Amino acid sequence: MVITEKQILDALATVDDPDLKQDLVTLGMVKDIEIKDKAIYFTVVLTTPACPLKELIRNNCIDAIHKLVASDLQVFVKMTSNVTSTRQGPILPGVKNIIAIGSGKGGVGKSTVTSNLAIALAQKGAKVGLIDADIFGPSIPTMFNCEGARPGVIEKDDGKYVLIPLEQYGVKLLSIGFVTAPKDAIVWRGPMASSALKQFITDTDWGELDYLLIDLPPGTSDVHLTLVQTVPVTGAVVVTTPQKVALDDAQKAVSMFHNPKINVPVLGIVENMSYFIPPDMTDKKYYIFGKNGGHVLASRNEVPFLGELPLVQTVREAGDSGAPVILDKKSEIGKSFADVAEELARAIAVRNAKLGTTKVVEITRT
Image (cartoon, rainbow, N blue to C red; front, side, top):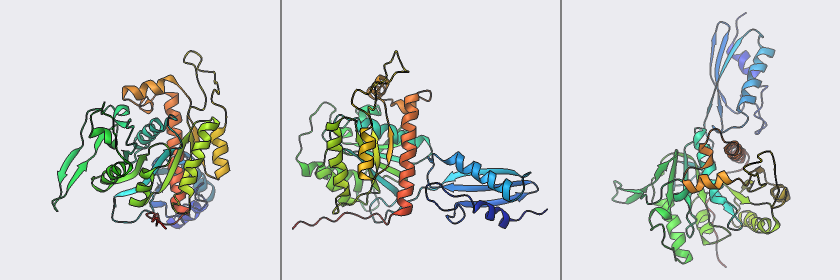
């Protein structure tokens, strides 16, 4: 029996991408089919290297070929990725997705979540950058063990000087903490903070990135408006804790992004400090801030719930030491951050498949 490429494609056309709800062939995700005697080789190009359904898709492909072509074939599936994008425009042309990470209030662990998610995506093989836009309370230099570091500066062919981000743990970094003394208070008016963020975006050589995460200040401010008016933002993530006070403020952050004049898709809610695990009783969970608040917030706003993260002493210690917990391959808490990163990558891919081109926000005052 001679196996043909058409038979392989017909079989794979029965395998759907679980998120995009279309078959792999129609989506153009099947590449480089080779048939050698009783062995079949092909590549599946996923929409993100952090796809949480990678093994499910692989197994479904193998099962389809065994069922619809021949049960005795050896099937070798190479899984690769090409991160999708809907961004257009002259600013940051090499950056595929810009993700704003915000919170309604301070103290919910937004920077800790952002740092661990950025590293988790880089560990999956994505090209990742992170801007610390929390101008008045920059914590990324501490969490990435870069306190006192300075970004590079180069002169372009047109005579313009641009910043070169630092790189740590596979993530490109830029923070106001890199250009001010660590112990100095930053006493700026709103326009000065907005100008600093704009420079980090427009006067920096970020190169090619799959994801650029923006760690925003708490609440809603000029910095948030500057971001969406400067570059097309793919979507936003809102970090909260379970208690009502935090949820009420997180709702304001969601409402800001959903405001018709801004209209930035909310990719999902992350609930941090969901429960406390005592260091000497790791099988115990104490819901000291309440339970399921993030789920309720996500359901109320009809946005994805990306996951919950526990309140654990080692997370704080890892951040303070400049080595986020995601770097510990044996850490169960690190795995929780990795799971949330996969869900975020998944939400970005779904957003890019279902929604239109990302545009800069134009806000006119009347």
